[in-house]
Amino acid sequence: MISQLGRYEIIGELGQGAMGIVYKAKDPLIDRIVAIKTISLNLAMEEKEEYEARFYQEAKAAGRLSHPNIVTIYDVGKSGDVAYIAMEFLEGRELRDILNEDAHLPIGQVLDIVVQVAQGLAYAHEHGIVHRDVKPANIMVVRDGHVKITDFGIARMASASVRTQTGMVLGSPKYMSPEQVMGKPIDQRSDIFSLGVMLYEMLAGQVPFNGENVNAIMYQILNAVPPPLSTMNPAVPEMLNFIIAKALAKAPDDRYHNAGEFANDLRACRDAVLRSGAVQPQAAPIKPLPDAIPMVRHEGIAAEESRPVTTMGLSSVFDSSAATMRLAAMTSSPEEVEEFAKTLKVARPTMDAINQAAPPIVKPKAAERLVPAQAARRSEADATPAKSSNLPLIAILALVLVGLILAFLI
Image (cartoon, rainbow, N blue to C red):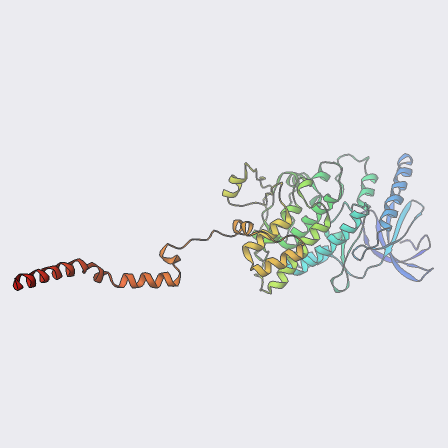
């Protein structure tokens, strides 16, 4: 093991990172413990200069990020053929290790973790930085459940370091977005898809796209739609099915446009779960996903509504806030709907929208719709049918008696 990197004194090895070894080290200038991630520059000369320039560009860009949910980068440097990044030393655990020990975390805890990651991603995206490799191994959970995202910009460096090796898959295939799989340009919506995969895994106990090899995984990412979360874990509220469906939409335009919107919906769902105070049912045993689930083809709104929902197919006009409000209208009281509207900062749905979203109301029969006064009058009428039917007979008898009296008098 090396003893020095630049001015940093190596204390020990923390583990193997995506690009090289990660060390625990000490900065003697300010007596601070840091983590140092190394990256090998052992490349051909014609590639080395370009790669090194990109490394510094990416590292400096990530170093400008200052957010509670993003690991802080202190310094970058080079020692021989090894470039390194000195960053905040975190005393905590990788989310990957936590999930390996407990596949089913409480829903409230899962949503709290993912909300924090989404908040950190939203900040990075606002500053023009896309992570490109969002996965549990790059999420650290430290004191009191605080979350930190690590390895910003590293995925792009990985692509540069192995671009001469044909047929090699970069990054973490199970968490890739469809545009990453196809090698298309990516933006912040790719990170949102990867975070959606991570959320699904945390609640279902397994990733939504899996297979025996990389090709099978990539095929599923491009062509398969995983089952709704609530079918994998009955503790998952229906609202979360809508949220995860939008995050995992195949087309970037159908996803959340930014991580802030994603965080807002997750926060609203988390608050609703906590506010309900209900004991959540135990998660069902993990069910293995099939290799591929055909995507739902939408022939039209009428056909879509008449067909039972069996997958996470997503309409291109899906709007998360509107869907949340419609769901609230179906399942909550008017006061709770009003609170949802304030939380999501959207207008409360009209009565027409609520009536359309609510389950159909079976109208009572005509007799059942009578108000009390009408019912009383009807009861009185029903109670005297014989009296009204004897009136003609009484009239005839009266006339006969009058005739007999007149005849006797004459």
